[in-house]
Image: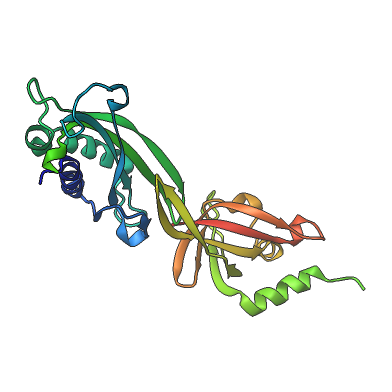
Length: 151
Length: 115
């Protein structure tokens, strides 16, 4: 069984866990307390294909191209040693876009790989708790080939 | 019968207030006063994308007449250090709570941040 989507998400979790000073790295959890911070969350995000316009005779179990956009949420620490959200963002982008496991083995980017990895952007949240507190939601795009026969 | 609101605030602070040390940091006078505050630390949730961070928003009620008696004016509130219940805070902002006898006879709710 080969599930590229799951491989991408699992590797993303490993990558965000390696961001310097990250205390908590989890997938799918939405509940944080100050003891978890700084934290990185990996959420599955959306996925789409172009198959709605493909009404050819192609059998349904033939490979097709998928674009998935998982979300990564970073939350900075609140008190004590502050790790600011700007530093976390820079490390996130650097680590994801330079990760050879994603580039070469899982997504297979490049001239003959038929994949792509892109940083789409981020949105920020800020507010007062015990201190001024920042969070960031970043999206990446991963294009991969879905092979139903391999699932 | 007229209600003595000042006495009412005093009664409430006598029952549930705690001792606090208020240190002015604006200017150079550095007034230090022993006052009574009511701990009003409230739960607060910060949105972080689809996730939430559950924590608290620290705050404390003080009586404006007590502050005034100690030589602490409104200009002295911001950035003052407030110590109570074993924790140190800085006044980052405040809310006037008003009173039937005028805002100067009422309470102020200090919005606090960690030192």
